[in-house]
Image (spheres, rainbow over the protein chains, first blue to last red):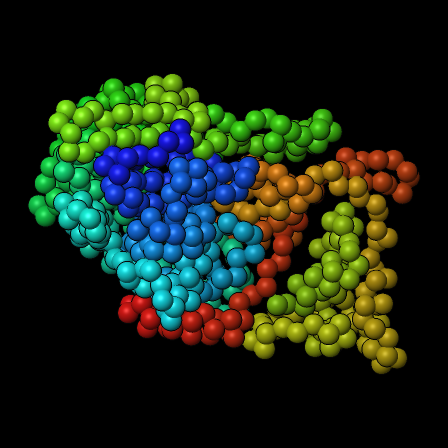
Length: 374
Length: 194
C-alpha cells in the first residue's frame, strides 16, 4: 500500500468515509491535489496525511491544490489542518459560497463553534484565517486568495505539463445566484439564540464543485455531492447539457453523493464516461445508509468496475457499553445508529506515455467491489 | 437573555444542580421577578435589548417576600435557594455532549461525543418524549445538549436508573459579536476581492 507512484504515474486514491471522503491525486511529477477531507474516527487525523508521509511525499512542497467542493462536514472535516500542512497549495472553492454573507457566517457561527468539528463553517473559517494570516508572509502559495470554481472554468494547470488541466463543471450560474439569497437568511441576528450549526439550505448539494481532470491518456470525473432534480439550470442536467464543457469522456468516475439515486443521472454515464469506466463511491452512514442496495444494483448495471471505499465498520469495542447503560438506553427508546465505517481506500494507478498501459485498481483497508457492499 | 435563562444558568453553575433536582417549570415561573431586581443581586449581565415584555409577576406573595429580603439586604440567591429541593446524588455512567443534526417526525438525530473517555463519536435517534417540556422549545438543528445515564440515590436510599437530557441554554447573539463578525468579514472580503 505504501509504495509511492512513479513520477510518470497517475494516481487517484479515493478515501472514506471515517467522517467524510477525500480524493488524493498524483498529477505526475510529484504534483499532488487533495479534494475534500475525511478524518479517521479513531485517530481523528486525516488518513491522507498519514498516507503521504508513509510514501515519502512532503505535503508542504508537493501538494499544489486543496479543494473544498462544498461545506458539508462529511467532506470537509480536517481540511483546514490539511491546508495548513500544504504550504505550497492554492485553495479552490465553490463560487456560490464566495460571498460576503458566507464570510459573515464563517466569522460568526464558524468562529464561535464550541464543539470541534461540528460545522463545516468552522473548517472554512480556519482556512480563511490561514490565508489571511499568510498575506504578509513569503508564502509558497501561488495565490493568496481562494480560486473560484464555477461551470466550465479551468482552475488549475500542471506546472510541468500544460496538457494536465483541471476544469470545474459546477456550480452553475443559476445555483450561484440562488445560493447568495439563501445564505442571507442564515446570518445570525442580534438577540436570536446562538447555534453551532446552521440549517441546510434547500438543494445545498447543488453548490458542490464537480471537477474534470484531463491527462493525455485518461480523464477523471469527480462528482462530489452534486445532485439532480431535473432542473435544466443546475445539477447534473446543467453539466450534461452544457456545450462549453471540455470534450472527451472520463475513464475514472468518483460517483456523486455516495451513490444515491438523487446524485445519479443516466446521461452522465452515457455521454461523459467511457464504456465500463472505473467508478468508486464512499458510503454514508448517518441516519440512512448510502449507497442503498438499489443504488448498488443500479451502479453495478452501469459498469462492472464499480468499487466502494469501505465495507469495514468500527470494532464493537470502540462503542461498547455496559449492560446497565444498554438497559437504560433500551428503556428510553434511544436508538444508536450503526457503527461508523472505517476509512478505506480505492487506488487507481496508470503510467502515462506508455502505449497499452493498463489502469490498475487496488483496494485497501476494507475497500471492496461495490457488489459486496451492504 | 431573560431572567429565567439567567437564573437557570446561575443555578447550574453556582449550585451544580443535577437535572433531577433542577427547578421545575412551575418553580421557575415563581422566580419571574422583575429582571432588574434579580439580576442586580446576582451580578449577571444581559444585553440591553433583551425583551422585557415577557417578564410577568406571577406570584405576588413571593414578590412581596423578595422585596422584603431585598430591603433587608439579603441576597436573592439565598431567597431562591429556599425553594430548591435538596440535591440528590446522581452517579453518571454515561455522559455525552450531543449536537442536533436533524429533526424528523417524532424524533431527532444527534451526534454524541463522550465526555468521560476519549471515544469515537456516535450518532443516535432520540424520541421527543425524552425531552422535558421546558427543553422542547430549545430543540433545533445545531442545538447542544447533555445526556447522562446513571443512578440516582433517592432519599429512601434506593437507587433509580435514570436517563437525563438537558439542552444547553445558548446565549443570544450580542450586538458587539455581530458587529465584529461583519467587520472581520469586511476585512476578508477586501483581502479576497469579493
